[in-house]
Length: 232
Image (cartoon, rainbow, N blue to C red):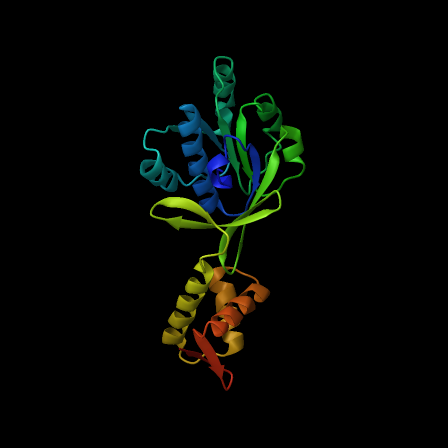
């Protein structure tokens, strides 16, 4: 049975709800590979918000180097409408942090061609396009996707995006390094200091920072003695 990642863009037409452009660009690249392997056609990506071209290029080169993606600005939608009359052109819309309202009517004329729509909010867009929702989120164990009651962590190994039932402790490793760097820079730090450092450096909430600290203590990577952080 194919994984969720292997079906994105082909068997699964999705609205992807995400606030993470880099990780979403990886999902986009995976979908381009899926479409190429399944249909052997070029994919058009409408860039309303910035797509990380470097990530796309490297991923395609490593996993499906004959695949083709044409990244176009939203004002080139007419070009897609002309192509649509001749062939089933796969379209991906990338709009994380940008308003889709100005383009919705144009996209609706192409909705049968839209395979993925990346956006930071749903607003019922999935119903308009007749697509299901996949959410790309993160916790202290890493990034994960949620779809149809399933939760799968993402790991990037040997240039390929893979699914895992448990996180690879990406944020734990990053948190550990951040705290170590802070101790080298500032000397002794307290629990409150450590929490604030993680919140600031990793752009996470206070609750998430505390969860990371608890997990690092649980794994004996660090401990607090007399209110002061010690690295084991």
